[in-house]
Image: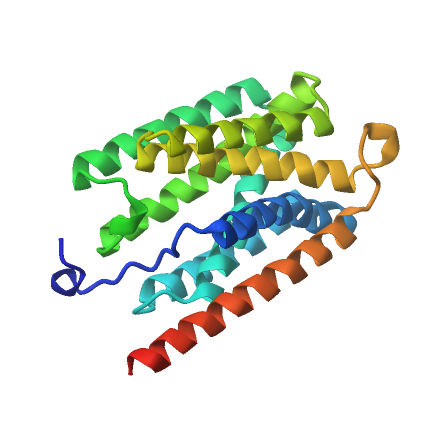
Length: 254
């Protein structure tokens, strides 16, 4: 489908090294930021979830209303999805007493159903073809489910299965590297992308827990506030560079 005919431009960034770096940093901020707001800042899981859900709804409105890719709007939405996805899993685990085995299975099924419905409706799951409002809604629903699933799977591996934060980060990092190798060897571009996208969430969560948790629990003891602040600064710098690059391309094209 021609974007001009659809009247909707693709507002998902190119999949580059910078994309993956910001994505992983965003997943870590989702883990550490949610912990900071709910625990350190004292808002609790309930109010944190409500506040972040409202901000996410506003960010999504901006994202859907923009006529072209805007790095700061896109990545702000991703960070907020990361926090909300983390909170959904944490509420199911801590407040509703749902086991991580169950929540992981539930989110896996929901994500699979979402992919099936998306493909049945559009016959295309490529992020290079997000050129209609419906496809963009499918895309962001998928992103939310990947964050929720990744959070549950990461907690399941590091806590329920007792792998620990360091080993969890190593295992998920190795799975991401394996996915990259499969892609390099000619694996399906769409599915290798989504598999890697899902895996970055538990990898980022394990990394976040490794940095923030006290040494007695196997972490490095940096704390949620410092970790969130440092990672957010790096995200801001990378997104600012992307925003300037987009602006320069627009100027040249004019």
